[in-house]
Structure formats: C-alpha cells, structure tokens
Length: 494
Ligand SMILES: Nc1ncnc2c1ncn2[C@@H]1O[C@H](COP(=O)(O)OP(=O)(O)O)[C@@H](O)[C@H]1O
Ligand SMILES: [Mg+2]
Image 1 (cartoon, rainbow, N blue to C red):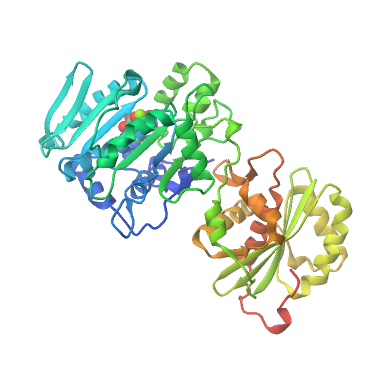
Image 2 (image 1 turned 120 degrees about the vertical axis):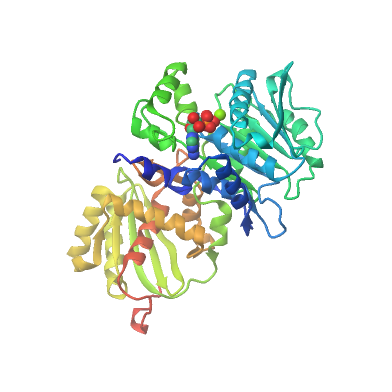
C-alpha cells in the first residue's frame, strides 16, 4: 500500500476503514448534525470515518427512535484508535443538548475507568466546554461530571461492582466490553428501561477481541448476531488487520487502526507494543484480530441476501463468469444478465475434485453459448489460462474471453457486495441455488493490501460459487453493450 498523506487518511469513509459495518434497518434520519455542531463548538473535528460511525450510531427511524436503541452499538475496535475519543465527544454533546441526561460509563478495570475519567475531566476543563459544567466530583471512588442543565456522567469499574442498582439511566457505556457476562449485563441494563430520553436509551459496547479466558458472552453474542445478519436494530463496527497479519507489519497496523499514524503516532503504537505481554495480545488488542473460534462470519448478511432473492429471472444481456480455487481443485460457473434496472446473477455449476476432467465439458458448454452472450470472464490463476485455451480451441473468439487481473477480481467482489447491499443485484431464490447460498453464507472479506477478496470462514467452505457470481457480475457491469437484447440474444438455458 502506498503511504497516504494525513489528509487522505482523515477523509477515508467508514466503509473503507472498517472490516465490518452492520447497520440497523429503517433509518430515515440521524441525530448527528446537532451533535456534530456542538462538537465543533467544543473545538474538535471528527475524521470522515468517525462521522460515518456517528451518523449510524445516532440514526433514527420514522418514529423518531434511535434505530439502535434496542440492539445497542457494538464496536470491536483496537486500542488507540478513537473509541474513547469518539464516544466521549458524542456523549458530552448529548449531555449539553438534552437536560437531565444520565450517563453511566463503566470499564471492567478500575484503572481504565479512572484513566477515562481523568482524560474527560481534562476535556471538561476546556474553555469551550467549561461553561456547560456545574461540578466535577472525585471522592471515595465516586467519579462524576455534572452539567449545568442537570445532565451527569458517572464513572466506575465493573470489577469494583459499579454499575448496578441505578435507575433511569439514559446512556450506558461498557468499555472493555469483551469482559462482560450476560448476567452482569442484564443487571445493569435494567436501569435503562426507565429512560425518558426521547429517542430511546443508547448502549455502547466497545472493546477488543476477547482472550480465550475472558468471560465474553455478551460481546461475542453481539458480534455473532450482527455478522450472521440476525439483527435489525443494532450497529456493529469492526476494525482489524488481516487474520494472518505479521505482528510487526506496519501496513497491517494501518489497516487495523484508521487513526494511525495521523492521530495515533508511531511512538504510541511502539509503546503499546512494548506494554502488551505477547504477540497474541498484540494481535487482539492492537490489531483487532478475532480468534478463529468465532468462525462463520459473513460479509453479506442473511437478510441482505434474502432481500435480493427473486423467483423468476429477468431477461437481459448475458455474460458468464468462471472462478477457480487457488489450488485448482474447485471451479464454479455463473451467469449474469444485465437489464435496465441492474444485474441478475445465477450459479450454473460447481465442480469439485476432478476439475481437469470436467473442464472439457465446461468449455463445450460455453462454446455452445458464446454467440448468444457477451463476455466470458475467467478468474483464478492457472485454471483460467487452461480454460481460455480450451475455449479458443473451440473457436470462441479471443475478444469474448477476458482473464481478470487481480485488481479486477477485487473490483468484482466489491461489485457484488455493493450490488446486494444496494439491491441492484438479484439472484434466484430456489433450491437449485443452494450451493451459491451456502457459499455466500460463509464468505467474508479478506483484505490484501488496500483491497479485499472473498474468503470462506469455515474449514470446508467453497468460495468459488460466490466468486464466479462476482466475476459474471463484473463481466456484465463492464460490458460496453447495452442491456437491451433483441430476440436472437435471449438465452433460455442458464
Ligand atoms: N478526530 C480526532 N481528533 C483528534 N484526536 C483524535 C481523533 N481521533 C482519534 N484521536 C486521538 O487518537 C488517540 C487514541 O484515541 P482513544 O479514544 O484514546 O483510543 P481508544 O479508546 O480506542 O483506545 C487519542 O490520543 C485521541 O485523542
Ligand atoms: Mg479507550
């Protein structure tokens, strides 16, 4: 990856810096503008990705409630990125905008809670913030910031028993949320049932991937549900390096930490590296990498996939995509039809095992259809070259065959993810497509450098069906021919 200037790093969007962004449904507006204006008054400015995160956090539904008021906001973000910075600014703004807001800010450890209190106490002393502050108290383990309008933020450590027995709490922050049991959580969130905050209470779960020994049910559950597409009413944001990142690869530091190096300088990272006891803890806490015991994550959620399934394929200009696995032991063939409103994709076939034997038949199949279709796009190392050769042998003209470059492959993956999320790409929702459905269910983004490609998150998963569909979509999208087809071009078999 090329070195990016400070400006470029500040202007990257949330979707560019985060590995996962899961948004709640039904968003029609956001409480962010008023909060942003107040943060500006305080003298702070968010980076673009922080603005994106804040817009989601404060997103509202048509009834005026926060879209995430039920499921909460979960941030799996490494240390030294901006969790405390971002959430504290939002909360200070809310506290000054809304009278009588009660905020509970807990960390697992006393040390963390005290550190946060000390830093926010400093913030409260700023000239631009001070006029809103009535008092700051720090006695006998009680730490609080009181605002002139009756709002209050109380700080404490869960390991010290802090957080239970409150009522009428409007906002709760669970820092170090990777150490938090469901039971403890239930006891604490009960207090928000009586919140009178107009748009609903807000719960923040922020932390880093748990150690195997951490009691981490609450955090794991939220992550798992979000990645499985099982939640409609929560925000989930995850920043992390690639799973196989080398601990001292600074490009991976930059992937994991969108604030490095323009906000969090190199020396802070080096200090953290020194203070963390092992490579394992560094990978979790500084690079945000989850242990593989949490396999089964997916980039296209179940509900997004379901929402784009249709019963009857529309007609359109047809292209094909073929994807080989790295080792050449699997191959999938997909079709795409470009029409006026988008692109429809389908899996045609998936071969496993004796691929070489099957390639001849695959080439025959395509050779019978090339006249009635547009591009045939192939991806995946040696297998693609062999197939291209077989197609030429069968008199398929070279201009119809396209071997994808690596950047084009990455683009194909992005096309599918964006298309499904935006609803411009459809697929068939019947049993014949089960192999594709299964591939989509276990496919996640694997970043390489600045780009990403599909990768399966279970041991026996197959990435080639989702890749073939992506490649076919790429062929359809990049085709220069119009979507309109004359009757000769209509293809029956797909
Ligand atoms: N938009 C920003 N403006 C100024 N400083 C920022 C910004 N974003 C992050 N930082 C700085 O980055 C550092 C790490 O942020 P912090 O919130 O302490 O991280 P975390 O809670 O994730 O460990 C802090 O020094 C913070 O002030
Ligand atoms: Mg912090």
